[in-house]
Structure formats: structure tokens, C-alpha cells
Picture 1 (cartoon, rainbow, N blue to C red):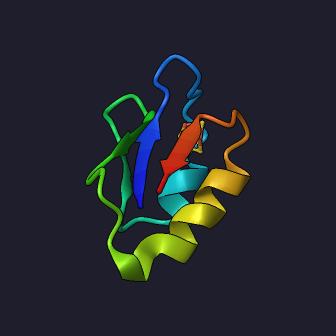
Picture 2 (spheres, rainbow, N blue to C red):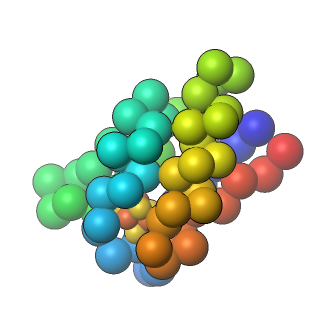
Picture 3 (tube, helix red, strand yellow):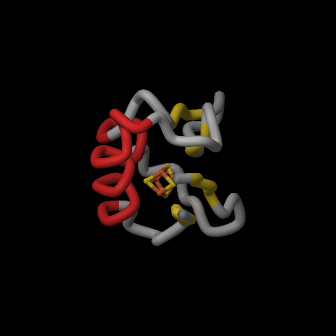
Length: 63
Ligand code: SF4
């Protein structure tokens, strides 16, 4: 499973970091960044929750 954030769509709500800190971080301006594009297996559920809860639908998961 891989994940990316569409930087043009992200508005920096930080939900992703809260829900899945293993994969997401925020930059110095509060916008979401992906720490590792390849999602560790144990973080997949949390990553899916982050995708579902991103208010901007900026998170894209590919399998
Ligand atoms: S939850 Fe969505 S909009 Fe908010 S920081 Fe993460 S990717 Fe960006």
C-alpha cells in the first residue's frame, strides 16, 4: 500500500497526523506531508482512517 498527499488540495487541517502519525507529519506551516510513501503493514488501517477523514480528500492510497 502506498500513499501520497495532493499538496495543492491539502489545507493543513492535520487530521492525518492525528490519525496516523506513523505515516504522516506536518511541515513547518502545518500542511500534511508523507513520511514514508510505502505504508508499513501495521499502519494500513490508521492510514485508511486518515484518508477517509481528510476534509479535503487530499490523501490518495494506491495498492
Ligand atoms: S488531513 Fe488532509 S488536509 Fe489535513 S493536513 Fe492531512 S492531507 Fe492535509
